[in-house]
Image 1 (cartoon, one colour):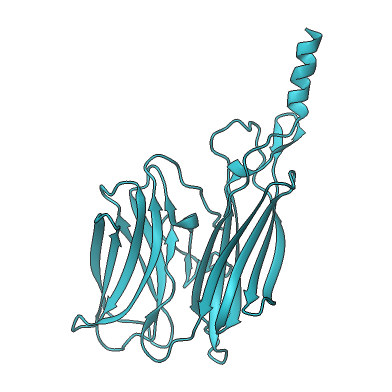
Image 2 (cartoon, rainbow, N blue to C red):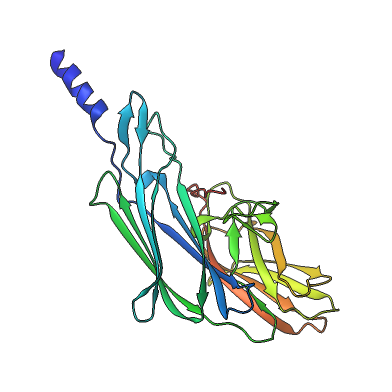
Length: 286
């Protein structure tokens, strides 16, 4: 009995470890509204699913994890244009055997001039130094001329909601709850999205077409009319599109803006993943 009790106490005081931590990095660029500066505003959105972290016992039925996240934007010559390190901590758990553990998210906005960059995100498990992940993503910033163009598309986990907040999780007067990694998991029936249209022609209605397609031929599409674009400021493009019977897999989501004569003015695409079996990691909204 004493041996069993000792073994039980060792289990309680041990750390709860998982596989190497995951890191989802989303990068989106928007026009810099400071027109004196030729460049863009880059949004970095990093999400760490809680299932990949080590949870340390802090008190009876109290376990906590922590992740050290370093975000960098490197110029073409390798010199940093931006760098920041933060420590992220998910909510305390009373039972680490739960299948779903809360993810943690961090978002940053950085204004940068035109050029070629590398976005690098490095994640280290604070309670197990050998658990580390690095994600690199190339980034090209090039200011458009006078023609209409779209920002990058931001995929959302739920509809954009009106908000007067002025923080990193709001754009265009809307609060955005991102779908980390463009991943739509079990129980998801539709996608939600946000984009900004710049320099749209004035005085005419515009057609906005949405389409989800895969290499295998699966597709969903819709069309709406934009009666009047905003003048001198971004026009927000928000909406949703049902996934319907589309099976699990990777898809390309495309937005097209067409004029009254149905001529293509601008288009933008992004990749999303649908998974009918696994739940998607949630993202922070504040």
